[in-house]
Each structure stands twice: as structure tokens, then as C-alpha cells.
Image (cartoon, rainbow, N blue to C red):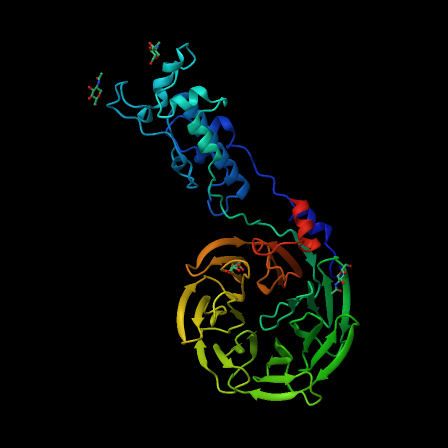
Length: 481
Ligand SMILES: *[C@@H]1O[C@H](CO)[C@@H](O)[C@H](O)[C@H]1NC(C)=O
Ligand SMILES: *[C@@H]1O[C@H](CO)[C@@H](O)[C@H](O)[C@H]1NC(C)=O
Ligand SMILES: *[C@@H]1O[C@H](CO)[C@@H](O)[C@H](O)[C@H]1NC(C)=O
Ligand SMILES: *[C@@H]1O[C@H](CO)[C@@H](O)[C@H](O)[C@H]1NC(C)=O
């Protein structure tokens, strides 16, 4: 049996590679430099724009720029960047005017007029008159000023998101259970994952894997969550225990009872550890106190599978299999808000960008992502994603949101907020993508599913405010590219 952290050669070889080699058939220069009116993209091997690989798009963009420059040079079409927008259907060739009689200005010329461009002509007639003719004459560059401007001007690049994970780790025994929370990437850059009765820690800086604990045959891991400082990991079990483990020493420092069924969700607020359970209750505990138990919330009528603290605003959001989403003010046991979906709510994420903004996603019979303003209780957005929403996470580096899904494509989607427009859709998992966590630097997400793999995707740009070295993991990524 493969052990955690091994990258199975079968999967690596057949399904994934670190590089995508774009197919260049149909996008060679001959084809792209087409003077006819036909859309040169029709020759592109991919007729699905959404699936079109970034490399192909970049290449087409380069080809378009090249042919524009060539036409500028040869025919003085004076085409500017508007002719090289990212829209794949853009035509560069201006429409051929039937009233064209040879005395019109350069910008209206069509390539057909210039069929004799190899014949000798004096400099002032070989090229069409342009406003910058003087600059051209005294310029040292062989390329005309118009073309230079075109080449130097910044092009609008399509957002580059790699469509394949840059790393796949085997995670044997990663359970396909919607209600569990088995993946958390802590602030010390260590990823915790619950596999069967064990918790493994993967140090992202060094790539090393350590087994933190093993509960034996009698119990299973059902949830885990790093404390804010990343030094201790809370672990919830199938029998309802909540344990706290010191990651440095790999020692269990506390075992807390209180739940009568599995502890499916955990969330930290400083020294307060909150746990949600299949016994329908939420417990607040102060882990500094010998008598840890503080409060029990009993509003949910079914399993509490989603639990997230907003530490800055001291608010808790809890989602349940009863299709309810409650927002709580601190440890107050009267909810501030009660929101709903038409299915279980596990996917919950607080916006790191705007006060009081909460995103939630519903399961199979709901499939919606809703955005709430918890300051006034208003719903700000409500979109149908077309598939079960298993998990949600805001980006910390950009105002975007990741959602992971189940049937039918088991995809990972990136959304731009507040437009809620789709930025990317990433596929690869063969089971629903139940588990999701964001790296502390905000650039990488890790997803886990019942296909027993963890996949690492580089989806967000570096926070521009941040400087200095990133983790080795990201260095490795840049080397791979
Ligand atoms: C060319 O066409 C323009 C407008 O169509 C007209 O004003 C001009 O006289 C024409 N010149 C010649 C040489 O036919
Ligand atoms: C080139 O332009 C100059 C000045 O504009 C003019 O004197 C000359 O006759 C032109 N030559 C030709 C071949 O048109
Ligand atoms: C991760 O590995 C690096 C390099 O070996 C080490 O310096 C760091 O302390 C480790 N992090 C944790 C939290 O153990
Ligand atoms: C970057 O810093 C500026 C000023 O400190 C701040 O307004 C902005 O929100 C920051 N951007 C991000 C993405 O953190």
C-alpha cells in the first residue's frame, strides 16, 4: 500500500506532468499570418475556449502581434493595440473597402493593394505616408515608430492559472465523507491531514512527512484544525473526543470529552476552541483552563459540519446538515443571524478583505454560493454553481474566492468577487473535492478528495505588498515551470 506523501509513479506518469506541452499544430506562423478574412483560430486544435490552454492563448496573442507588426511594416496599416485585444475572434485585417481607389489614406489600405511590395520604390513612396514619417526617417530602428509603440505597449495578459496541480501526494485512507474536515494548512507552513486513525504532518518548507498521532483501531480522525500560531493541532475523533497535540513534540497535551458523537468540525479563536458534532451541539472550550468547558450551543437540529471563527470581529459562523447557517457574536448563545441553503452547509468562509462578509455554499440539492453581509443580515450575492459545493475559501492576496465541488465534474473553481465571474475551473480529482486549505502565503491551495490524493494548485498571485523569500515549496514550483 502506498504511504502518505508518496507520489505514485503511475499517477505521475500517466495523468500528470509538471509541464504542459502545447500542441503547436494549427497555430504556426504561416497559418496565423493569414491575410484572408477567415478566422485563423478555426485551425486551433481546441475549439473550446474555456479549455484553451494559457500557452496556446499566449502563442496566439504573440502571433497576432507579430502579424500586426508585419502588416504595419509592409503596408502601413497603422494598426494599434486595439487590433490585438485578447478576444480570440478579433480580426486584424481591416475590411476591404469597395470604394477604395488608391488615393485614400494609409489606414484604409488593404494588404491586397500592396502585392508589388517587393518592387523598388523611392523611400518616400515605398511606405505609406504616416504622421510619424519624420521620426521614421531619422530612427535607428529598422522597425517603424508605430510598430515600436505597438511592441512596447503593455498587452493585457490573460490571468495565468496553471490548469494542472504542480504536486500530487497520495493520501491513502482519506475518507470520502462530506461532513468531515480532514485538511488544514497552519501558519507555520505545515499541512495537517487526517488519514483513517492517524494524523500526518507535511512540512511544506522541507517536504518532510511526520506521523503526529495514531488512535489505533478503536477510533478515527474526523476533524482537525491548527491554532492561530500554528504550534498546536486540535483533532476531533469519531467517538467525540477533542484532543490537542503539540506539533513540536508530537505529544497529546489534552483530551477533552463533551460530545456524544463524532466531532466533525473545529475552529479556533485565540485560546477558545469550538467544536461542532454529529450530536448537533457546538461546544466552546477555553483550552487554558483545567475546566475547559464553557458553553454549549444547541440551535442546530442536525450534524454541525461547518465551523469558522472570524477572529478579528469575534464572530462565529456555523453550518449544519439541517441546511442552516448561524452567525454568533462571540460566545453569546443567541445567534445574530440565521441564514439558509437548500442542503447541508459545510462550505463557509469569512472575507479577509471586508468586514462582516461571509460566503457559504450548499450541498447537492442546493449547489449555490451565497454571500452575506453579517453586519446587517443582507444577502449580497446568490449564484447557482451547478454542482454540490463542498468547500469554500477566500483568497487573501486578491478579492477572489475558491470553491470545490462534487458531482459532476469534481472541479475547483475560482471566482472574482463581487462580480462572481468565473476566473478558472480546475479539474483532475476523480471524487468530489471535499477538503480545501490555503497556504499561509496565500498563493497555493491544497485540495483533497476520496480519490485519496492531495493536489496542490498555484492559483493566486503573490501579495504585492509582501517582499522577501517565500517558502521552498514555491521556489520549487518556479523551478518546475
Ligand atoms: C477616390 O474616392 C474618393 C471618395 O470615394 C473620391 O472623393 C475621389 O475623387 C476618388 N479619387 C479618384 C482618383 O478616383
Ligand atoms: C520624394 O519626396 C520629395 C519631397 O517630398 C519629392 O521632391 C520627390 O520628388 C519625391 N520622390 C518621388 C519619387 O516621389
Ligand atoms: C519545517 O522544515 C524546516 C526545514 O527543515 C524547519 O526549519 C522547520 O522548523 C520545520 N517546521 C516545523 C513547523 O517543524
Ligand atoms: C497593500 O497595502 C496597501 C497599503 O498599505 C493596502 O491598502 C492594500 O490593501 C494592501 N493590499 C493587499 C492585497 O494586502
